Length: 368
Ligand SMILES: NC(=O)c1ccc[n+]([C@@H]2O[C@H](COP(=O)([O-])OP(=O)(O)OC[C@H]3O[C@@H](n4cnc5c(N)ncnc54)[C@H](O)[C@@H]3O)[C@@H](O)[C@H]2O)c1
Image (cartoon, rainbow, N blue to C red):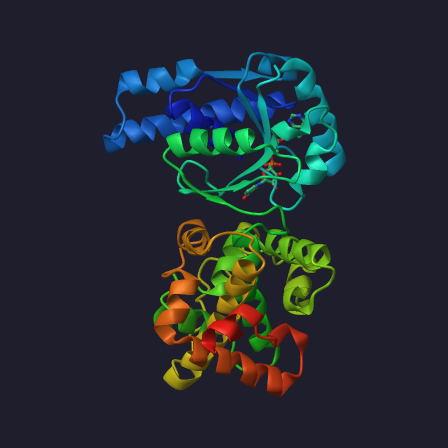
């Protein structure tokens, strides 16, 4: 992630120092950058002088001291609080008072990361999506310690990198990784209940729902280890709210080493010569699948709005630009009709009696 973020900054004309403790990783990052720039030249979107400019802007180092003089440092190291703390303290020793120190963390709170700084008003979350040079969305997360100035400076820098920024509260999963949970969780739940198999759920969500990838194809793409860990982390961080409960099906796939495309097998078998299973193209069943997953996603989007995690506009932008949903969930709910969405959730709640299906109060209020 760090190398991708560095590339974006260097292409935007900044002088960038990419620091990694591991020289091998730095060498890899350098090679990968040259390759990417050459590909851009082939495609005609960059010329030789543009390539040289980017390369001249990039400095590679194994020492945090080389951040001296920086105006912004974005940390994207291993996801462990104690390691981030040690690095944050060291960075603060070398940079000036006006330097913003940001984290690209996906799952730790910005408040906890910034707590070790002497001047914590300079901490902020700047959360990119992978791959950073291609994904337009960046979540900007001020912590309770963050000053207004840090927020506005960080936001305007990232805006100037031609990214779409959304501002959200320092809560688990920020916007995208919180609101998207039911896309995976409800699909897994329906599979576990025997409502449909992986291929049929994926077919319904792409063909009828208009999503670019079905949940099982997407989980295989992300990796079941990564996706399961995010779900488990969000679940624990929300004090075990049943809405975010992880699935045994995914856990067992992970334990078996069926991590997805990267291991050749996940929910599907990607071995050469093996055909992917065919879906049951039953339109009625397919629509039920889409309606249920979509109702759960919309409920989550309303929860984020209800608890002021982000603005209405930012919640919709986050889901269309961060995970390529065909429509913003809040706008989509109005298209479907709030009463219809609410009654789907109420039916699920009545049938299962589980808290996971409780409709959000704001959705209820607006539907009324
Ligand atoms: N991979 C993603 O899709 C993704 C998306 C958004 C955010 N993130 C976040 O970005 C961060 C990095 O994730 P990643 O997937 O790029 O991890 P990664 O393991 O691929 O890379 C981390 C790099 O940090 C280096 N590193 C470790 N300790 C260091 C230290 N003390 N000082 C300097 N460098 C050190 C490692 O050598 C490695 O090259 C995490 O906080 C993660 O939550 C990842």
